[in-house]
Image 1 (spheres, rainbow, N blue to C red):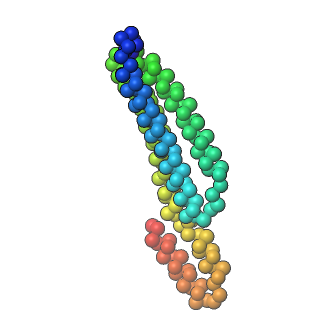
Image 2 (image 1 turned 60 degrees about the vertical axis):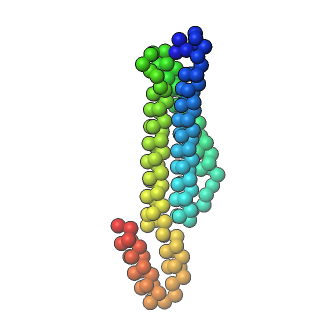
Image 3 (image 1 turned 45 degrees about the vertical axis):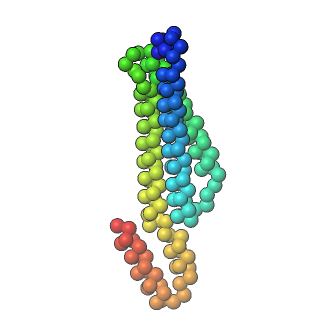
Length: 150
C-alpha cells in the first residue's frame, strides 16, 4: 500500500474500493430479499403489513454497515501487508451477513408454507358452515391439508 501511495498508482486502491463497494451492495440486496420474503409470508398468512418492517430493515442495514466498517478497518491495516492483496475482512463480513439473511429467508419461506398460513381461510369456512354434511367435508379437507404438508 505504501508503494501504491508513493508511486501514485491509485488503480489498486480503486480496485479494492470497488470490491468493497460491491460486497456492501450485495449485503443490502440480501437484506431486501429477506424483507421481500417476510412480506410474502405475511401476505400468505393474511396478516396486516405495516411500515415498521421497512423501518426495521433500514435499522438492520445501519447495524450491518457499522459491522462492515469495523471489518473495513482490518482491511485498511491489512493493506499495508504485501500478501494482503484483497479486502478479506470485508469479504468475510459480507459472507456472514448474507448467511444470516439466507437463514432468515429460509425461515420465512418455511413459515409461508406452514399450516398456519391456511388457518384464516379455514376459519372463514368454519364460520360459513351451515349443516353437518358441510362440516364433515370441511374436516376432511383440513385433514388433507395437514397430510399434504408432512
